[in-house]
Image (cartoon, rainbow, N blue to C red; front, side):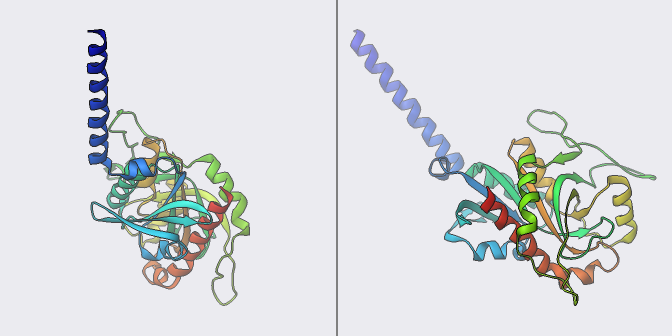
Length: 283
């Protein structure tokens, strides 16, 4: 009787393990097992120019599709990576980031791309290492303007910080290696980019307004503005994943932004991607 009971218990345990394995495979796919033992760095960008250099440098490239979204895995600077094109805007960025985190479980995430410059003296080609990201369009709108409010974690109902911090270790490494990376010069004078650490503001609008630039500089102390960073940072913060945004300036978000961006976006995207490659080497 004793042996018979042990056999029944053993069979029940095996059946439970088998059922749980099937559930995990259905929810997350086979990658949840095959990728789990690797140290993977996730890299995302909003549109093609921002990740093209990285895709071209990718070794042992493999393409994966999750819910129609393309993810590329391989090696950059000797490190295992997964690269994704998020699409423009906060919703697209958050969706793609979530799919990536659930299927590959990376150790960290880096956002690379271009942005409008807000800080005094900042110019196309310059690079901003994000110490934090902030949603500039999340809050309460009144006649006097918008009052920012913190987002809330839907799982815990806890408030997120208005300024979502980047990972301090990633910031430190990026600051250390940034001056050593190869960049493209800008303009007739071959001006090399300056590098600063600052605040990146995010909203679902392309800012082409000097008055808005002055408002963001005054009220948020922002150094750059774009359309995805805070959404990605929020997802990573809520999932407790180290995250860092790197943005190179393509325009100054003023009345000339719509003309300057097409002229400088390739240089800006290259400079940001070059810093990503340097950061990967240093990890």
